[in-house]
Image (cartoon, rainbow, N blue to C red; front, side):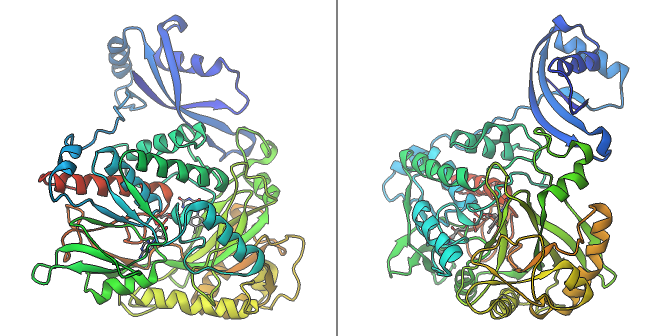
Length: 549
Ligand code: FAD
């Protein structure tokens, strides 16, 4: 099979045009093209009046070797025609069930049922290693009820919310499934295939920027749980890990302690707790687990009418079904030395209350698969640096987040409404007293105010500089009535838990830090990929083989 990339066709191309383009590229006749399938489809909208669809296809052709040789001879510097890579994932060990049947076998523990944890559990279970997954929050349907209670009635359940519970932080999200990380082993493909098996839409396999949306994510994580259980794994909900059992001489992990006081013995513990497990991070520091402060970003969510973004990005093709609701990605280097960028953009979505702690306000964004809500939203955030903006201590970033989240809570009125401001007012340096045509989607509601009171000065300064610059790239971005809601603080983990080549903590053998909370992922796809990687490392260790991540 051959993979052809960068096949560019007009947005309104005919159904036959793709086959013709393949034949033209390979210089073959139509009858020599035996079969083709779309591997990826994206678009290039840099010229709004001539938007192109950009395809990568896999095809089988008659005399493949000869066709490839001829192509390479004619285009020696071109790498857009290659043999299709083998993307199949192969388990690193074949004797998992045998190992698990041995007397004294201790099953690996996975802490956290987010994308990293559930993917690690799935892979371990399929290898026959019977993992035990411990999750502090509730099963996803009950968690949904608790999450909606905050959005509808200002009632927060600290152990069951947008951050905590089955499915992890990305369950109530846009479900974007792409990542910038290098992926030579096609682990991303493995994740997407598992998601499709679990009920995600099939188009995530070929769209360049796929997404699932909240509604389908909920049933997908339930399906994955059933798969893990059928393969011999176990989930325990409302089971928070509050301590580690360490060997006093070697510091090797011997088990975990739960909040209920139970000790569960294990020699392999995957720590996939996400970026909001602040009490768990404090526990790890008390246990002297090696951790480092790491940069992250804070800012606000911004909302515009989706139609403004569509027209700015797609011009006359706005609303075209193949393009869907338009996205954007923006970056500006401010003169105070700070990077300002858009984060977790949700087309046709809503801004959500995403705190996991009482007395704090945190924003984030979500959407449904249809992306049909009136507003587009994204985080517009400014980079922070440990040792400059807060002390270079592993827990200091977390304290810094809390400080601004509390200010936002107070400024919002002390009942989980969020502080909000019109962009026009923010740029003019005056508080908002009312909002305009763009109706903010954040629930349980917003309080018009002055956002500069719940953000560091250098963040306000960088945002004020960046917004007009962004308006030059997306006309309307700095429109007077666009709404900013604060504060966006949980952009990534404020710390890193370093691990060695074998995936284990550098000073606590048997502890496998993984996913976003440990600083090894940023998003659903990369966290899931890290889950696979860390499960492989555990399996190899159980089998007495070396692992290299
Ligand atoms: P998490 O998903 O955070 O999972 C960690 C789990 O561990 C949680 O379920 C938590 O309850 C549990 N836990 C924590 N401490 C303990 C403990 N002590 N004991 C037991 N269990 C514990 N990313 C994207 O790629 N696309 C998006 O569209 C997107 N949208 C998002 C929207 C929102 C509202 C939010 C909040 C996040 C979004 N993200 C998105 C980010 C994405 O969700 C995370 O990057 C991803 O979930 C990280 O996966 P993880 O498994 O490492 O951690």
